[in-house]
Image (cartoon, rainbow, N blue to C red):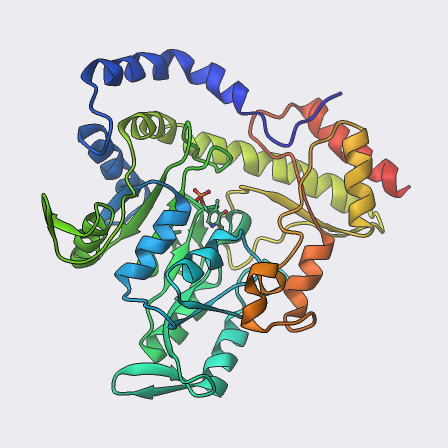
Length: 388
Ligand SMILES: *Cc1c(COP(=O)(O)O)cnc(C)c1O
């Protein structure tokens, strides 16, 4: 049996008849960049997330850069974030010449640990003239950037309380968590901080036919500024109030996304059902090699962009699964503070032990909604056979 990590062809076949006429309409109109199709999707996206505004852009990575710019993060400013995430989270900070400062994760949900965030600020930060400074580096601390990893929100109640105490804006990297709900706040990802950042990379729960991204906010001025920043900081055509860059969603992606958005809840439920199947099978198996199944904390609604196990002998298991035609992946093998490109930040091994441990123990299994019962059982059996 073959079980790919993700098979988008099944979803495409199911929606082909609906998507293709819509695309042909766009070809006839030849209106590709922003425009009415993008606006229509933005309205649906905002409605789905529960926010006043959604602003399309070219990718999740760009959404992060735009959000940081809209929070006035400048060269040499520090942004507090997690080391255990896709590269773009910290890459966006570095791209605008700001400094990522990594705070370790909570091992139960792999997200930024609010206790450590608070401790860092208590020990290092001071308020001066309405700004927050890092006493040790002399730099300004400008924002907090938690990630809702794998499909579950970070502990936003705690993070927002800390942010409020220090007067710092929170940018939510919601790239993996569209539609996930924070159980404490009863709000969706992207509707809790100042700005939410989303990716429509094809492997996300809502995936485009290429790159795409969006930002969400409830603040009218922030929405205006983001709309301007994505078109080179224009206020009106060819009048530039500040320097932005070109990062726009196109009509083709927006049309695909608007159609797919109607099915997103159904797909989330399919993933949750698959997660329940795996959890039950792995927990009942009492297998020594499986160290932890995913934990859903704080009454959250987890949308399982990834299903992550902690396991013993992870790298050998990866080889074994691949030999047996079970798709799997490691998200992520190297925490960001140990990446070569961030050597200049001065971190060393041991600095952020939970992120380092997660990078050694985690494995992602196939979880896409169209998996069959036989495929799921085969994944379970193959893993249990490896450890038997
Ligand atoms: C996918 C992802 C991004 C980047 O999105 P792109 O659309 O690929 O640029 C950023 N952050 C996280 C956590 C992601 O998973």
